[in-house]
Image (tube, rainbow, N blue to C red):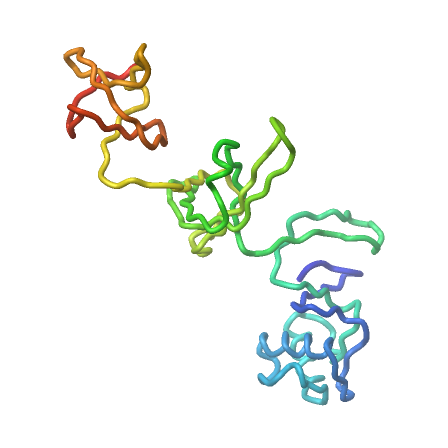
Length: 251
């Protein structure tokens, strides 16, 4: 049920065509009839057939009455434009704008889709390497992670005022049961290199002649080439840089 009008529940149907006339069992057909028939079939009140060629009759009237009775409504067997709300897809009420006693005009509430997505803020320096289709890992507030992918990337504003937003679709919607709105962490791998040595970024020592080095536990400096940097870790390579090496890191 979406709302109550005059103390009567107003149910929701899913379709692309709103009701614009009263529909009964008098041999009616059309896009609005097909929409109602399709819903009644999905709800189990009508035998499945082709909604596109459906024509109302006595069986339709009885199906509407059964459906109305299941909702605690008057069993009229007829549906009028004011009897139902038609939405284009399964939806959830995101905000209620009407107040008790308000007039019937206007929009009493707004809806959003039932598919949960994540809206992420993208650092400006990373906007050029994150694109549609990129795989993402989303860390939920309880520590669990779920997989997703970026479906849109949009930029608003210009210069220092520019903001980049990405919408991330979640692969397993069931994993988000119980999560309505929450702050999450989104991680996107833009490039990866296998079998590398990494050290804390704070271990890098800037050299006067340019470049970087690592300081070993004996105080010696070893020049390095740096690669990918992520999560305060940096890929390093160079002469004398081996797995298991102990380096000095600034605190």
